[in-house]
Length: 168
Ligand SMILES: CC(C)(COP(=O)(O)OP(=O)(O)OC[C@H]1O[C@@H](n2cnc3c(N)ncnc32)[C@H](O)[C@@H]1OP(=O)(O)O)[C@@H](O)C(=O)NCCC(=O)NCCS
Image (cartoon, rainbow, N blue to C red; front, side):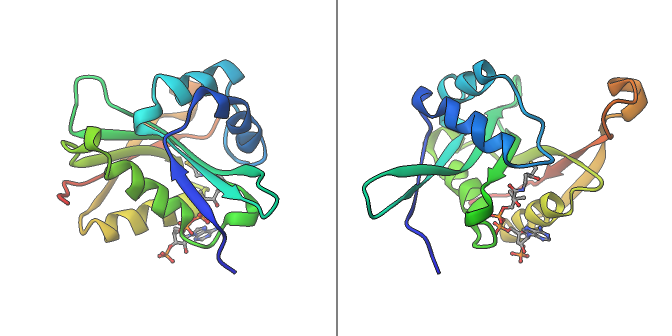
């Protein structure tokens, strides 16, 4: 069944819902509520909120991507986190949210996407491999934050994924 989902830039009013959604989307690291509020305000132009509208007029946040343009690299969109609630998975929502951000006027110069993924996050690899295919370009990987060197052994290595160049 396809759901009535609307994609929009987030506002600060979405901040706490983002906090709750991320909590319900392991293995994502939760951030502070304050961090989510900044994502929904300072980084709203490169982030997206997916709202599911119910028959009762209520809406619920079922998807979120936090992203930003890399400082000093206006051609690169960095995707920080992607979260889709259980009920909305497997329908292409995460892929649609990435495309939605790329279509914004402030992403007109973007030719690369970067993100980081741990080796064991199969769903995330599948999502970004799909994005590279859809954009008809390649995906390269390298180590960004290493388990011992950067996390003192407390977190798995985060692989840097770079997708591009692409044009739209
Ligand atoms: C990863 C996640 C965002 C995917 O959301 P989604 O809306 O279900 O993803 P999509 O439907 O757009 O799928 C995109 C691609 O990934 C694949 N995929 C999605 N979930 C998958 C899974 N669990 N295992 C294998 N492949 C998966 C899809 O098959 C699709 O590929 P295809 O088009 O080649 O078939 C969602 O499962 C989630 O929130 N997981 C928990 C948080 C997380 O790990 N986030 C990613 C880290 S940034």
